[in-house]
Length: 520
Image (cartoon, rainbow, N blue to C red; front, side):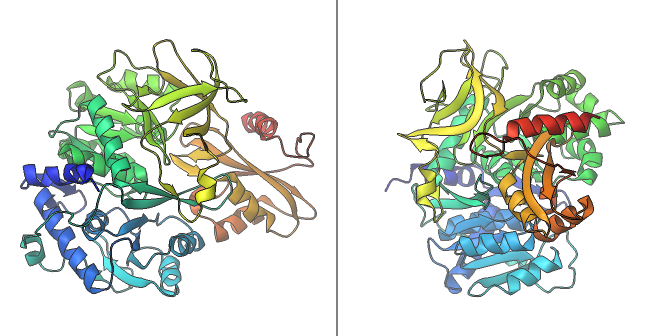
């Protein structure tokens, strides 16, 4: 097999070993490209002694921390497949992912939710590695330090990524699907690295870029967008805790202190920054040229929010479009003549607009967005049949609605599929509906997402009941079974749902009803 893309992965370490790649904002510690290689190689040696071999799956249940990044690269050194897991998921959801992925081992933080720790400890047949992570005080559970002594960092690592090849699976990312249960998206090295190279070509990212890594490392936004892309580019990152209100308040102070010049945002962060930047030091920094590049992705960017942000900060926002199954599809970039919609296709990617019968539509006409790309998932883990649904003769039906203008820019106008995108995270309505239907007295449930200035979309549960059921009952039940970010912000009790001739709930009409009530 060819290892063209693995050579690309080795290049930054060989070309600039002493350059600092990772700065941990919370502790101030710095790690060079060579130290990343040395640490990850040592961890890979430990894994081999524990019986981990190439192709084994290993879960990572950690907050944003340097250890998360070390493990990603250690698995690359060992040929293991990373299964990143969000610590904000419900313990039942975390258990499902670890069991469904056939994880042979799991690393988890001693500072995470105690119920999650107990759930992981109760799993049979999985090696457990509890970790004390940098900058986090232990909650009482004992773990080990991943780094150990400083000698580990100074030790030579030998050959870089010796066992992996281009076609090998790099990671399995679990993403919400329309059928409720999360699906494991299998991504190969040739896919992730090839897609990054196409993105770098359009954006001309150079080694003097320093990215602010604030999205969860357990999702592609944090690892792929804000860590692996800068690594391949030979750039640097400043690693922050997962984005929250504290990060909002200190955002521009941190950017200025660490001389960050590349930011990758989601619409909800843009909205919060506009509200929180009272000192306007961010405005001054941007207008003085402090930010070279501002990417926006993972969720639709409302035009009003885009105009407000660009007007205030005087920097262009390069919006892009992609899916977990396809990675980046289109992007706006400084190499293009203008910024329009969600940009133009990456090299090698084709986007077309089709009608309900699959017929290709002319420029300017609205229909479903379909993609032909070399950067597609290998499969859904344990579900090869389901991957065939969105693919038809090599064409991926995205479920999004849009059009391509006369200048080849893609515009997304609506979402055909029911997935709710809250704060850049895809959430399955069916999963929430199924949970609500388990509550006594509930006869039917339909969940929709409606526009929200902060989160992009908020979750509204429409419920039909037989008996005395309160909104607080539904929310408490969801809280006991779902991640916090999946709990409906509002519960509406209705006598009936709008339905089609087959009895299926017409969510478009239901959503219109909810939007009218929400404005009252």
